[in-house]
Length: 584
Ligand code: ARG
Image (cartoon, rainbow, N blue to C red; front, side, top):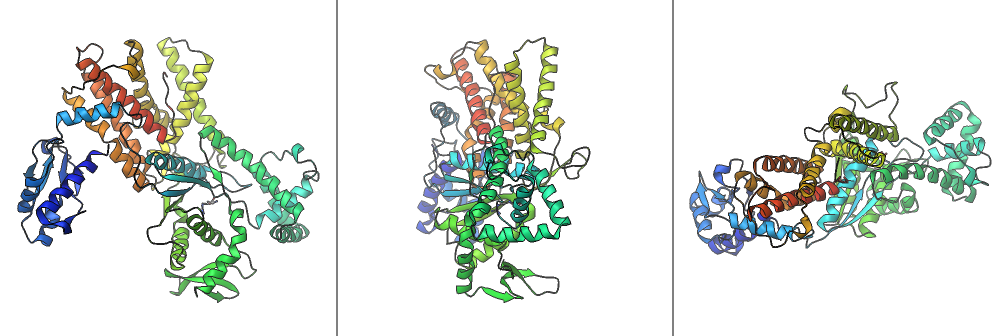
C-alpha cells in the first residue's frame, strides 16, 4: 500500500488528464497537509498554479477537477475553498481499512520502492592515528540513520568508511614506530601501542626536533608509495591498531561499515589526473597540475585552481575524492552518492563535484550530494571540550552518558521502591545512555550546530530518547496488565470513535510519507519529530480513551491502536539505530 498522498496523487492525475488532456499528465497536485482541521486533512493547491497555463479562473479549474476526481473511497466529497483550494477530508471507513492493512503487515503497510537505487553512503570516515572526534561521531550517527532509512526504503546501500589511511604523515609515524618499538615488525602480536593519538603526538615531537628523523620520514614516504614490503607492513600495523579502536565504537553504537579508505584509490590517482589532462581541463601552474574552477575567485579576483597534483608529484585529498567518486559511479554502479561530512567541507565537495561533472564522470540522472552537518558545542556554546580543555574521547563521552543514565535509573528505582537485577539495570542504562546521545544528535536539523547537554538528552520530558522509549514501554505495560497478546488479537474490526483516536490514526498512517521524505531529503530529524508527535498523540489518546476497560468492539480496536503505536515507534527508532526496551 502506498502513502495516502501517493494514492491521492494518482487520482488527481486521472482527473486532470480527463479534464484537460494528456499534456497535463504528471502535473504535481501540490498536496499539503492542512494546518486547520476545519479544512479537512489535505489541501490541493494546483488550480491556482494552472490558471495561467489554462487561461481559466482557478475556481473554475478546481471545479472541473473536482467533478472528475474519483476519491469517494478515500475522502468525503471534496470542497473548493477561497481562490481555488481543493480540500479533502479522509473518510472514517478508509482510515479504519488502512489501519487494518497496516496491522496485518510486518512492514506496517509500507512497500519497498519500485525503483530501488544503488546508493553509496560515505560516512564516519575517521583518520588513522588521529582522534576520532565528535564530528566523526555525528557523521557516524547521522550516516547510519540515513543508511538505515534508505535500506528500509528498498535501496541497495553501500555503507563506505572513507578512512584517512594514506598521506605523508605515515612517513613520520612509521619512522617513529621503528624507533620506539623496534620489535614491532617481527612480533606484531606483542605490540601494544596503546593510545594512538598519544603515539601521534610523540612522533610529531620527534619529527619537529630532529632533522635526521625528518629525512628518514621523507624517505619512508617514498618507500611506502613504491610498495616496499617492510614499510607496507609497518603501515598495515598502524592501520590495524586504529581499526581495532574504531571498531569498538562501531560495535557499541551497532553501526555497520565497510572500510574502503583513501589508500584504496591510490593506484588510480595517476589515471585520474591523466584523464583530466586528456579532456583539456588541466593547467600547469608553478609545477602543480590544476583545474581552474568556475565560480571561484581568489582575493585578487583571479580564477581559483583545484590542485590535483602537487609540484612534488604528490596528490591531494581532492584527487582521492575524484577517484573515489568516479569509482563509485563506474564500478559500484552508484546512482546516488551521499557524503555525510561536516559543513566545513562544503566547498571541498562543491569543487570536487564540479570537476567530476565537467569531466563527464557524473552522468545524467546520477546524484552526488554533500549531506552537511554543524558543529557539536559545549553548553557554553564553544567547541566541546573536557573541563581541562582537552578534546573529549568518544569512549569517555559514551561512558559518561551511560553512567548518568544509570544514576537516573537507580534514583527512580529507589523512589518507586522497585527492586531490579543488576542485569536489568545495566541493560537499561546502556540502551538509554547510548540512544540519548544518538537521538539528541538526530533530532536536530543536522545543518545547525548543536549543543551537547547530558541533562537535556537524558530527560524524560520533551523531544528525547527516554520520552519515546517510555511511550513504547507504556504499551508493553498495557499488554502485561491485560494479559494481551498483541500478535494474536483475533478477528479485528477497527472502529474509530473519539477525536484522539482519529488524530492518532491519521498520524500512524502518515509514516510512509515521512519515510519517503527522509529518503529524499536525508533529514533524520523529520523522522524524530514524527516519532515525538506520535508519542504525544499516543499519550493523549491513552489518557482520554479507556482501552482495557472499553466494551468490544471498541476494546480490540483501541488495542490495535496501541499495538500500531508501539510497532511504529519500534520501527522508527530502529531506523535511527535505537533499540527499544520492554521495561525501564
Ligand atoms: N577523513 C575525513 C576527515 O576526517 C573525512 C572524509 C569524508 N569523506 C570523503 N569522501 N572525503 O575530515
